[in-house]
Length: 42
Image (cartoon, rainbow, N blue to C red; front, side, top):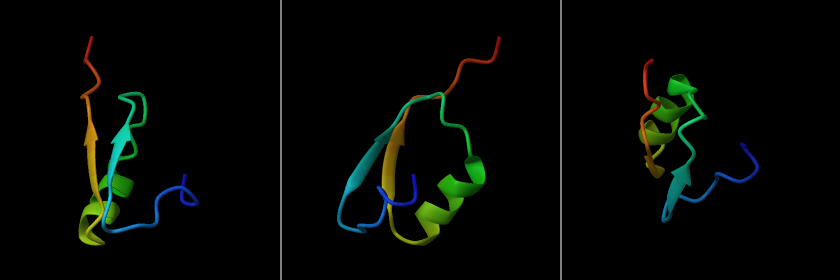
C-alpha cells in the first residue's frame, strides 16, 4: 500500500475492509486525504 500512497495533492479511496487506523492517522498527519466507508460492526 505504501507504494501507491505518496502524493499529498490527491484524495484516495479505501475499501472498508482496510482498517489500519494507525495508517489513517499517519496519512492525515502527512497531509494525505482519503475517503472510506466505515466497516459495519456486527
